[in-house]
Image (cartoon, rainbow over all chains, first blue to last red; front, side, top):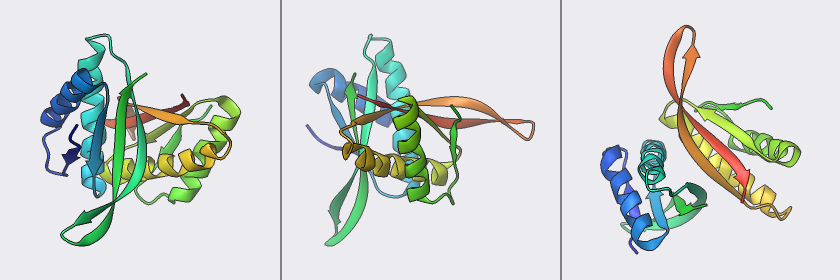
Amino acid sequence: MDIIKVKATSRTAAVAGAIAGVIREHGLAEVQAIGAGAVNQAVKAIILAKRYLDEDGISIATIPEFVDVDIDGKVRTAVKLVVEPI
Amino acid sequence: MDIIKVKATSRTAAVAGAIAGVIREHGLAEVQAIGAGAVNQAVKAIILAKRYLDEDGISIATIPEFVDVDIDGKVRTAVKLVVEPI
């Protein structure tokens, strides 16, 4: 299962569709964002994905955590949002 | 139970302490943020609060949603993050 990487410029609906699709297929999705704009987009996409999945009778919650990621040889702190049914 | 309102300039540790305290007392906390910087601070504070509560054996998850709020007579869309034990 690939991590869904979100940028500040990512389209909310596209990310939401990806999250909902991964949860339907794998029962869990991981969303990663670096920086305030990206984290905001990720949260908005999870809200939309929640609406999509509510229609399928799937209720989701998210567990956020910090992760260190390597970007072009530099270590940066990302926010990882684990999204799963409750 | 008061809603914990987070700004882009809010101190992460202070918000995290408030979230952990409200969850210990009420079993649920509601965090509200308007704008990317505030949403980012809210998510970071929830990650920290999760660490505080993990030490008490309490695991938390977050359910995000949009809410309309009245700010000085103008309707704005806020992100509400409901934080509760799982």
